[in-house]
Length: 253
Image 1 (cartoon, one colour):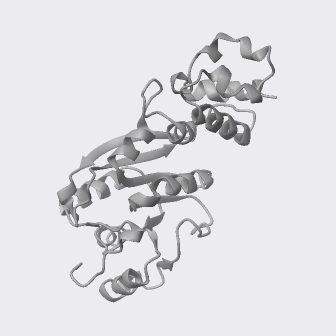
Image 2 (cartoon, rainbow, N blue to C red):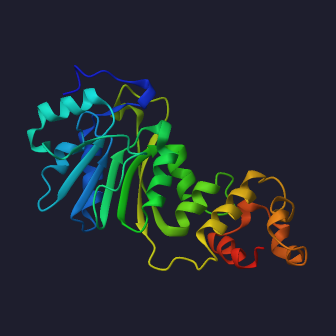
């Protein structure tokens, strides 16, 4: 189904062709209930053909590449009126209520996709996505790990991250130069109390932008001097838990 399609490096396109991996992703998707489903970047329809088989599901897919849109419309007539020809990073919410997101995400915008998911977090029921392994590991990393950073804290503040399985390069055409991994995000029922989300994001970004410094030196501008005497500020950003960051927001100027 991919033979006549043009691969566009600018869009980070790699076609998933391993049917076993496709089925594993679909099985992971079916473990949680949903009615509204958005697929991001369907490409040649490797996952889409399985999604169309799901019963009682309102499916929409977003694809930026006009050639892929034409291909999908031609080869999957059931997608009529389900395709949104748009840039996911610029589009409006596809549903008015809660919805689930799935996709083999373009690696060159994977972090931006996660930030968009965070923007929509009030309406996301589940997200299952294929990412570059390094990005997936970063999202799932715990404090104390050298790859634990801004993305880890932002996502884990609002979602439980499940690192599901890894995917070999040979599962794609053409094979990417990196390994891949599938993760699942499930909204937390009890989000850590924080002063405001804006304060939380500011604190985390400021702390990690100078991650080699102690927290005291990295975030000095955000706190009064007497607050900075707390022993917690002797630590570096990567040593703080998500809860630590949330609790600290209450002490910010």
